[in-house]
Length: 214
Image (cartoon, rainbow, N blue to C red; front, side, top):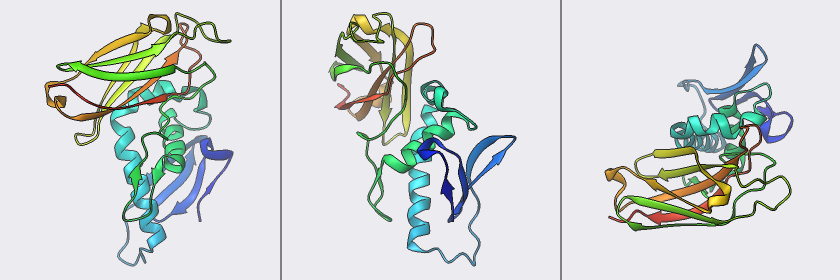
């Protein structure tokens, strides 16, 4: 039986189904091993595999974002594995064979900076997704020069746009130009902030889903 040490950000040890955790040179990792024919494939094992596969598929195109967003929690593990551990345990709803990503529960960045306040998203110009938020630079720990970190994720295509350090907290809005292939499709949107010295981060906030104007 697998165990998680030090909470959801801790190392995963042992195995559940063909999901195996271990440590190499002090770095924790998670991987899938091929199922053996003799594997009983219980419902619990199937459930764990589906959850792992869903989490992996969702986070893979966002890896560059996660390397920054979870860097302060990459203790004895990679930032991507820290993100995997959190979302595996917190962002999957349902049970096999009906597991789904709960986009509202997804966390793509984690930290102590104040998060975006009252963020919204819209698309009223072809190929443009516009983020807006309320300037909360007066909050303790916040700064008007904190940099934005934005994600626009296309579920059917399993593609994500990660826009980092292109806007400031104090500007209260930012636009993202998406590929032509995104036109008319629904995208999931997230916002976070990173300090100007690139040390501290905020938790990401799920802004919502929007259909890209065609």
